[in-house]
Structure formats: structure tokens, C-alpha cells
Image (cartoon, rainbow, N blue to C red; front, side, top):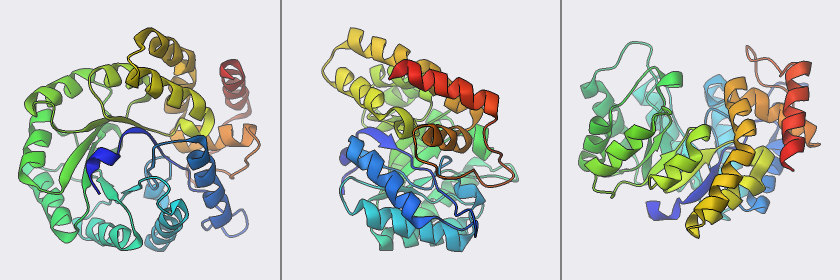
Length: 295
């Protein structure tokens, strides 16, 4: 599958947990995916930050990946987050995702020890050599402890065949401009910072990787449609209408706020996994008011 098929709104589903067993709640996960696909998102990205991938055992990760890919059933493209602290397990997950039918994988280099550029390049190279599907390089130093410069990212895209897409989540719009210039506009890049969605699209982003469609799918999709149609005034109005929600879910933590918001919308998917806590009553009330205001 060409990376060109990953365009538009790429939605991150939550990973729901069974209240009795604390294991993966398969029916709730399938229902979450159905809501996103039926709302019209352009791709699904399970097992990212919103999907609490970092809090899953390997067996749970495999189960969630298999359920997600199988249930999407090629209705839209699927890019699976396979990030892990070790290269060995990232490769294992990448191979599992490919065998389960994923269209691409997303890789965030996670660091306990500070990684050198050589170690980062080797990490991506070894994953790429282990699979045949495209890799979305993911830069998010706030969660990974690794910050990759636009120059390093452009180098890896040039040197590693499978690395064909970039998700940039630093919140620095200048990095997107620099990357666009370094690659002569040939590297598809994706916005991963909700408050920068409008600026990122104006800078040439191919898509927006976001958990927001779980709560406000229509607004995110209308924003993308307005951008595609060149209706910048309409896009600006749509963006600032949803911005308070985007900022709230980012500051409150994606799994916590999205699960609380889904419950407010009548889809109780349980609490995030400990040590994460459910959203407080006061914060839930604020989120409810924000969601009510954008309906």
C-alpha cells in the first residue's frame, strides 16, 4: 500500500479494559472502531498514546492489534503503533502487525538511556529490514525522551527505504516547515499536535493524527474538507470552534479525557489503566460543557 493512501483524519481509538478482569474488552474496542469508521475518518491508528500501548503486556498488545486490524477489515487503512523500549520487541510487534494485515506501522523511539543518532538510525533500520510495509517515523520527545531533528528525520527517510512518512508532535510548526524544505516537499508529514492542526495543514501536512474524532469527528472532518477545498476562512472558523476541546484533551491526557468524553456521549469504555486515573468530576463537567458548546 502506498503511503499516499494515508491522508486526512487519522483517528486513534482507545483501548478499553474489562472491569472484572482488567483485560482487553474486545466488544468495546470493536464498537469504538466502528464509531470512528462510520463517522468517516480516513484511517485508523490503534495502539498509540490514546490506546495506552505503553501499559499493555505483550499478549494484550497482540490481542488489541489483532482485534483492531481484523475489525477494521480494510474499510480504511490501518497504521499500528509498534513502539517499544527495545529494538527486539519493536521488531516482534512490527512483524506481528504486518502478519495481521496492517497497512503500515508507526515507530516512536522510546528511551531510558539517551539515544545517540547512530542508535536511533540503527533502531529504525533494523525494524525496516524486518518488514515489508511502510513505516511512519514518529517524533514526540514529550513522551519518548527522544527528540529527532528535521535533519536526522530527512536523513532516515532518504537512507531507509521503508521509512516513508513522518508524524511530528513537538508542537513546533517551524519543524514542519524545515522538514518540508529539506525534502523538497516529497516527505508526507502528519500533524500530531492538536492545537497546531490548522497551521500544519497550511504548511502542507498530508494528515492529522488525532484522538479528537472519538469526541468531535464531524468537526475534524469538516476542517479537513474545508482545507482541501481551499476554503481557508471556513477552515479557520472550524478550527477555532473546536480548539477549546482540542486543548482540553491534550492537557488532560489523551486516554483519560477521551474515555471520560466517550462516557459523556453514552459510550462507557471504563477507566484508563493504573497508574492513570479517571478524570475528576470537576474536569468531567468542564469537558461536558465544552462538548455541549461545539455540538
